[in-house]
Length: 98
Image 1 (cartoon, helix red, strand yellow):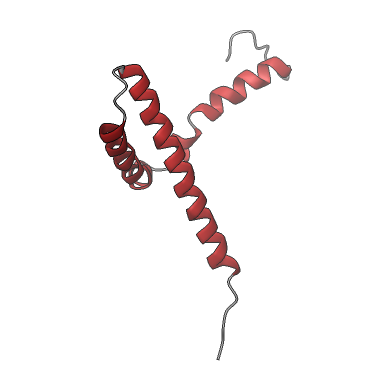
Image 2 (cartoon, rainbow, N blue to C red; image 1 turned 90 degrees about the horizontal axis):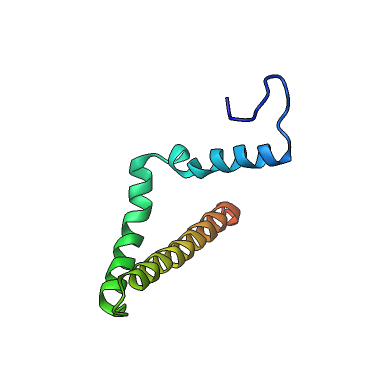
């Protein structure tokens, strides 16, 4: 039981948000298998790493690491957007029957 929680009592707004944040933190890990996660993220990670290695020469490791993570985030968002659009396209595409 969480500290401050009373048995048989519903959590207040503040307690509920803390529980929700803790539960949502590892949702990605729980909902996607390791192989699926690797298959989806490895190509984007590799491209982001190459971009960072070739173009990010700030002379500061922290800035280069943040730039790499930002690149990974943006590329992943783009890939997921394209993947979602393609899924939607194939779902609503009219079927041409003969």
